Length: 181
Image (cartoon, rainbow, N blue to C red):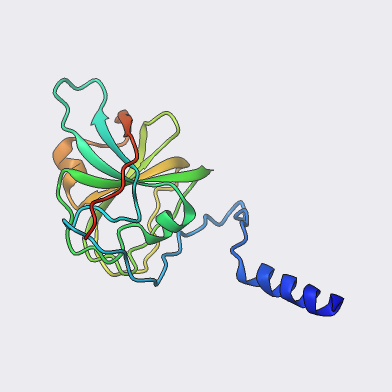
């Protein structure tokens, strides 16, 4: 009986996702899931991402507002914008990373070309990877530590005047469930 219990425990641990700190010289990649996405109603938001927020550019009167979906949990970060066919120019996804790191992203199952904006814990942009082509597994990073990563449709960062050094203001919105499909 003890052997069977030990076997079950070992199997459960082997199947669970372990948190592993990256090696100092190897930034971790955000590995996307191959699970199909939850149903969408308007092509902008997923049921899977109930968190919402807005982002503005600091020190800029009449700053445009970016409507955000928040990826705060591991499953949300892994899913990201995979399987999306479109995203409005005034929308984006903000990834809340678990700690400061030189984060690496790629575009597996992501159909929308993106700008990837890497932001430090003080909400200052540390680097941008612009116009990332869809459906690639090339690793993208900015060789700077960040705490947040903002994904926007391609060329949006430039149109909004977001560049390294830009300070952003994040405002959370109360979590609400996305409309039923």
